[in-house]
Length: 218
Image (cartoon, rainbow, N blue to C red):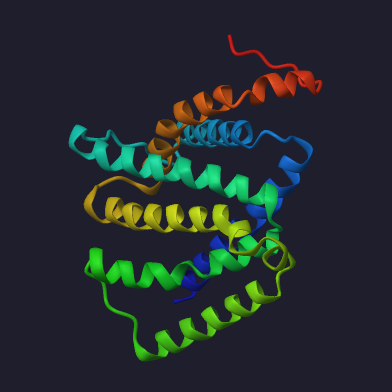
């Protein structure tokens, strides 16, 4: 029980801390996809280093499982792009509130697509209170008052892709015999190339060079 609670607490802390950290980073380095690419590379290097030390094991993925990993990576990349785009135009509090709403969707999608238990009446009541709190925040948010629902479009896209990635990720965890480290390694490795191409296509490298950060694509 305590291990379950500690895992939830650790996930919540890391998720919230990453939102704040990314908000600070892109305020000083306005190149969100480039920042994402660096984060993916660092994560992969860390996993490989941990494997060299014997802490984790990267499994060999079967060719039949690649389609699900490619799908997850596509959703993962989309979520990163929308997340950093939302951070550029919205405050951190908005994204934290939006992320707290994700269980409202995942609990029903888990039931419909993964065959898991439907939410109980107590869970439904808790989710209803959560939804009411989120609605109250949106109604009093200055960005919503000024821009209306259009100011939230990247937040909605981020939430949608994150929920879809969660469902696909759960399917991968349940249907494939891959360790957690292997899943993270392959999802990040498959995401680097599209993120890098998007970074170059958006001209972020040239903008960084003009801003005084010297980079090389060779």
